Length: 359
Length: 126
Image 1 (cartoon, rainbow over the protein chains, first blue to last red):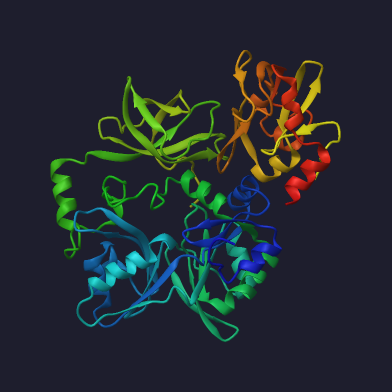
Image 2: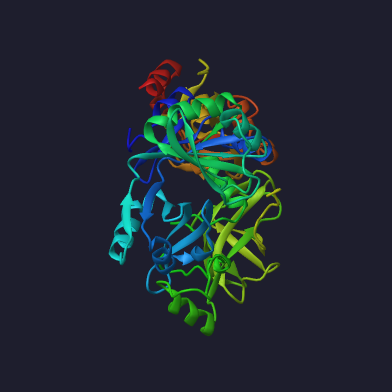
């Protein structure tokens, strides 16, 4: 075993998972097959182990106010029992990490961050601490699973004996077997569903209940394809400290009218001076190899960028990718070429998401 | 795991079926299982010179691209055009419809360096 096991490691082995190292964790890349798991999420329900992700608690009378100054997002708009996507920026407006903020109680917030960035995010946030705010990195104590797919509401009813909140971005605290856990109607696949965050010892019985209720175990391979079809960025591929959220197309998630936050002045300056590049969707029409990261992107005999994420969309049956392209090129319909092992494959810029889901 | 007795195998999981001075090349059942759902195949074009142990083809799963090596040296005389439309043949019938290319051997003595079914079985069990 190369990486750290999650509390579900033995469940993955029992289910015949193929494991891989991901951000220092030994994670399932697939069970029955990526295509089959992708289909399960788009047409039924899949369950993912996301215990490798980090959990931070931010508490105190000034927790909300502090978060709205250290994160780019609509933090002041988050009511108790609600969740929002947010971004941790450096002073230059570059992306350190993207994350979810859950307001679990009046003065208590839960942050869920990418596995590869736990220590960097924690160090950064600790360094920005001010006022009556406590910060706790509880990543080692908590596990999490994501249930995604059109059948997720029924699965929830079977497992928890109540209805899933019909709205997205809701979080509720429940007790199961005497232990508290959080249910959030969030996810990263474009399908309805929920995520459960619980203490490590609780997660095995939860996994059993969810799979017994009909969830198909899904690995990181399917997760990557599902999020790419939605045009959702993956930090490390599509987000970086050298790119701003405006370039990444995440401006919608940021509140420029509220308090000043780290990186705000840099973002406003970029708005003023013009956004140099944009993270574009790219589609190949017809048969081609799947796209992969770092393939050169060409237009009219000049290299204009390289792919950030890429793959094959099982839904479309064609290769798709995302790439930062100069704003002049980043227009849906623009014809470009992708260099795959020396062959220039014709492609075009498209609007994201690549596919329409019911969400 | 299916390892037909009448084939020779490379450590890099290609099989070769020799018929006189020509041969058919594909990937083993073990290889297709490891590669998982194959969604694209790029066999070498006829006329290509391939060299033992060097990259001759590329197959791609949803997750990653993988190189396929020539078990022996020679000239490609035919590539399996059925893989264009049905790359999954590599998964479903790796020793039959999922063959990758036919070649003319330039040095049949290179075959001696390949494994028989028993030795290949031990190789993948390790």
